[in-house]
Amino acid sequence: MDRVTEFEHGMPQAHQAWEGNGWRHDPIVIDDQALVINVRGRGLVIITGCGHAGVVNIIRHAMRLTGVSKLLALIGGFRLGGPAFEPVIGPTVAALTELAPELIVPGHCTGWRAQHTLAAALPDAWVQTSVGTTYTLGAPQPGDA
Image (tube, rainbow, N blue to C red; front, top):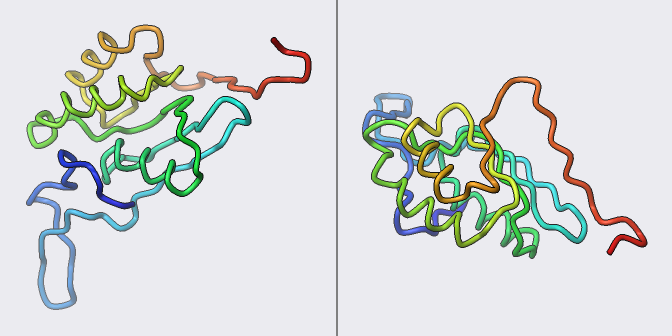
């Protein structure tokens, strides 16, 4: 994932990678993954894993790769929980508010403070995640107004 935001810096110093003869700080986490779906006529649905790259970096990377500038939904881990990531909550929520997704479902590593901040900033889009929940985000059908 491209790192393009000024506020998402990756993993803190405690995150280490083995280099064969020793450990070193690894802010990148090269295994960061996300699923990107372009719903015709509505925008991107992005499902993140743990959001190690930063959720806004992930969104911008997906938009650059697809050429689609509309975010329909963001679902998954946003990596905003804990003291190392809480300073990123404000700028992340501001960026997500500007993107105005129709659905935002923060998952496991988003953290309590970020969940509440997102719920207050995007009350019509924010949904508390739970196991077994199904989301249907279909494309417009012929004849739809």
